[in-house]
Length: 276
Image (cartoon, rainbow, N blue to C red):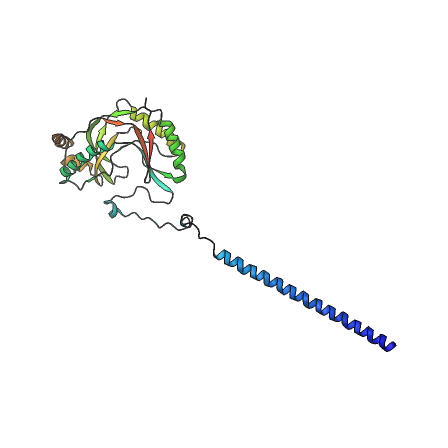
């Protein structure tokens, strides 16, 4: 009986050891299965991440470096950029709008003037005809909307006007890089002056330069490179040019101004005047 009892005890111990071993093996198999599941999920997640839709082109372009813009006078008939190009900076100015019909009249006169001036200089027609009411200033992109809002509020109470064009005169830009032949515009009622004062009050709030203290209002017609006013006055008297223009019958009568405009970069914004 002792032998049987001893044998039974040893057998029980072996069964217990076998049970522990089997439990350990089961635990390893479960752990292995769990790890395999995790690996599988990671692979699936990686595939899902790899198959995401690409970013829209507009967003991608936000992070593309803008190519440097160089000032090449040869591409602009020798003109030199007043302000160096910087991303986010917009060359801007305010002016009185000239209607398409009036602009066509100016264009006809300008073409005749260029022919008259050909012997004394290489003149070019201005790209557009307008009456400037501010200096050219640099406007940051995020200032555009606030500035436009303020200008509209100020100018909405300013009355409209019919301008009277006067004599031809020579002008030169501030940098003395170009000479202009322009048509002087009278401001006897000081309406144009009231425009510039309203505009200047807004520009001052944005720390931008005011217009000239004693402005000579005019509409530029043609230009040539350099400050050559004295040479032109000597060889081509203004009176002679005006006589030749009058002989053509091309005359610009009253210019009706119903709105001003802000040009900032390539964008043009209307600034309506009072209708009363």
